Amino acid sequence: MRGKNLVKIFTLSFLTCILLYLSFPPLDLGFLAWAAFIPWFILIATEEKYPYLTALFIGAVFFFIHLSWLRYVTVAAWILLSLYCTAYFLLFTLSTRFIIFKLKLPLVIVAPFLWTTLEFIRSFFLSGFPWFFIGHTQYRYLPVIQISDITGVYGISFVIITVNACIADLVIYYASYRKIIPSESPLNPSLEKGESHLPGKWLFIRRYSHCLFPTRKRLFLGFACIFPAVLIAAMLSYGLWWLTRYTPQEGPTICMVQGNILQDLKFQPTDEDQVRILKTYSDLSMSVKGKPIDLLIWPETMVPGILNIDPALTGRMIDTLSQHTVLQLAHDLNTNLLLGGIALAFRGEEQMYFNSAFYYNRKGELVDRYDKVHLVPFGEYTPLKDYFPFLASLVPYEIGLTHGQNHILFPLDTVKNGNFTFGSSICYEDTVAPLVRKFKKNGADFIVNITNDGWFRDSTELDQHLATMVFRAVENRVCMARAANTGISSFISPDGAIYAKLTDSQGKYREIRGTLLNRVRYIEKYNTVYTLYGDYFAFGCMTVFGIMICIAGIKKEFPLDNL
Image (cartoon, rainbow, N blue to C red):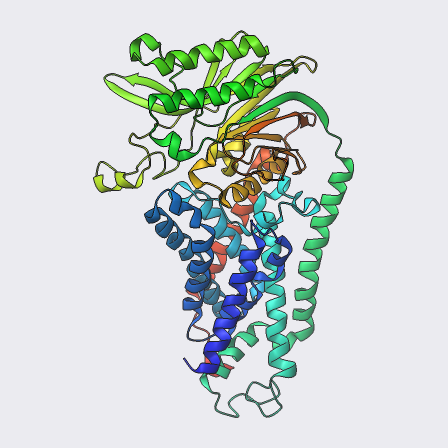
């Protein structure tokens, strides 16, 4: 690699890394995402020898930095997950170059379908990791994200990638045919074919320039300029139209308790630690006594005792105290309770543990329980541990959890607003779009998320998690209420606005203690296009990509000597 070419490759790659980093939390400069991929796309289309190293460099730098919060749990998972996600950048480069040179298509046609397909695959493949989608960078721009109720977050990613690819194509076209290429250059389209011997670098760039319709310049320029503009105009027009019609109603009053129990204390607690955790949450809950509350919520696994088993069977004092505390809170506060804890069940002599949300009525009676359906691999259970026992060392729990089977809905009676129905996702489940969609489709008026992000301390994981949840609210037009142990406890309205967030007097919102009380905002029951039909848009992109790759596979190699 020559020095000049090395500088160009490194500069463009580093520029994409910087822009991508700035686009996501914590800095949240989401508008930069609309240009972040341009340098990389230019390298994909014009770099002959090192585009795959470029993809690995960009992907590895981005994911190793943004996933650095995983090191608090396990360094091995941090490295493996970063490498796994980086593989999607490499696959994107391989597939894009294969299609554009085989089918003579520009990036603006190929890249959006391929990128959206890969995000969709990553959302479910190997249990799924629906994190760091490029559409997530727009969570604060309400007019932009409203189309999520039609296309899901994938529609926003599609538009962003289209704009990036369009600009990259125009830059390459302009550089190749207007400024950089002198009249005597072999890249000059006025030269006759075969008139000169093209150097390898020029030959390769001209190969892509042929994909930009050099004999139909007006057609290409018109399409490249109009297509993204039409998409942006349609997206913003729909978003502004929906926001002007949005008139939410006030629903139940919810109080979320954030005890800020550090994971080091909670992970292997002594009996005294468990009592201290229970007292912390109980005292915070009692601090709102006298206020009209319809639902009091504790975050994921914040009840230290087992609630669904007779304490006489376990013989543990903390189980007795936990169950007594629940009854006392329901009586003193006259409210319904949703409490995160661990449930125990027996199958023969086998003990099964569940990450659960326990729902109690105002009398302190257990109404129902939701067991977490979508467990985190190597976080809550170990896949293939019977065949590879060493994998168990990657799991932070001493015991494996069992996933639930049903999407339970809870009935809620309110003081002033009648009756409602709500669902409760647990932790990472609010990033799983099909799961939240099922709650809404089954009739939920609003959805609660209880989570313990204390594993990741005062890191940007908390911000990234909240940003992802915004899209669940917009996709299904449902209010999301989030109770987090260390933050960020918040309310998100059906338009995606974060209208309440627990902060202290200095504005800090991570690793603080307190209660957040507000009312749910809801709209009259109706199912959005996304709620009804799910990820049809992503499936459509996958279909188009499949057609492209199949045609490219059977097409003869693009002949360089015919340029």
